Image 1 (tube, rainbow, N blue to C red):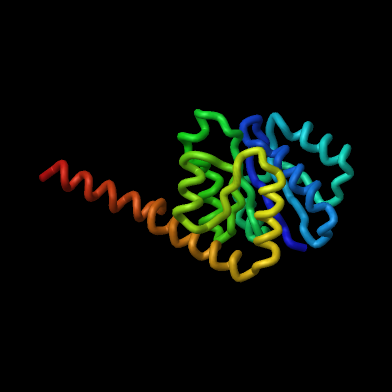
Image 2 (image 1 turned 90 degrees about the horizontal axis):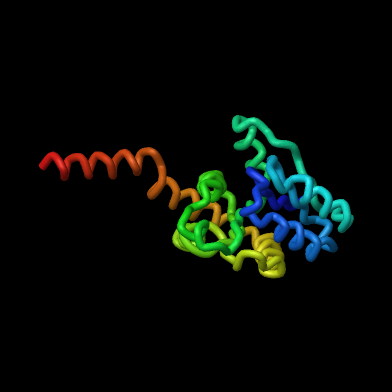
Length: 183
């Protein structure tokens, strides 16, 4: 099956109910499975929603040790990340998208602000408006139907992270700043 994955905190600001709504929209696409792995304040509410909607295309897995995450992400075809459309989160970049991009996974990101900017600049994902389940479903379906697009986005995302956010890139920037200060 084609796996859409969310890995991380099931927090109030993450807007995961939108992903559950997208799964409901795509419920007839039996080949698309949604796997949410993690823990947090919204976990039980999400489980309840999945049960009430009888979404057999959604699995909510338990929190896993950080050492398991690379092998879990390797099983994903597309990853999902989001925050609610509030002012404060607009200024932050979700660390999750760096994990996904570095894993060469295309990302469907329900963001505005800095996280959206990273996804757009990286060409590693599709940005949709927070809370728009229909747009999330359309983006997932687009990626499902186009394996070449998924592969291209995966490669672009990883290259972007390596160039701009790897330890080597940051070490080089720090070195340049220190040399400029010393001069």
